[in-house]
Amino acid sequence: MPSSSTDKIFYKIGEVAEAAGVKTSVLRFWESEFSFLKPVKSSTGQRLYTKNEFDLVMQVRQLLYNEKYTIEGVKKRFNSRGKMIESATTFCVVQSNDNVELLKMVRDELRVIRNLL
Image (cartoon, rainbow, N blue to C red; front, top):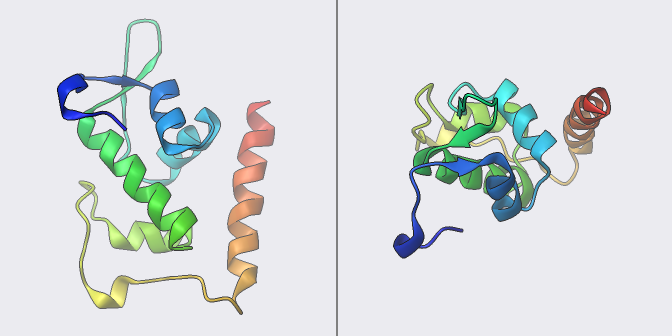
């Protein structure tokens, strides 16, 4: 996680992936799923994330991995600009007895990764 003394204007996809503890292919998948994650590309095609997008990635990671949200649940928590919606009705936490949804999410992510290989 960048500290305030070393904040940069842009972060490369590898830096964001390392900070979030995910692979770059997962970030590319998230870009396809979440309209608010749209990093700019450099002239060489390198994805460059702003500080705001970096923070959004960390929030998405928190919701998916720690709070066990589904992809759809995360989509419902954010508006199209990436602002979190605080309504209690938007919470879509995967319950321990609802493993089917979690397995579907994992399957979809694995398919994306397989297609990237």
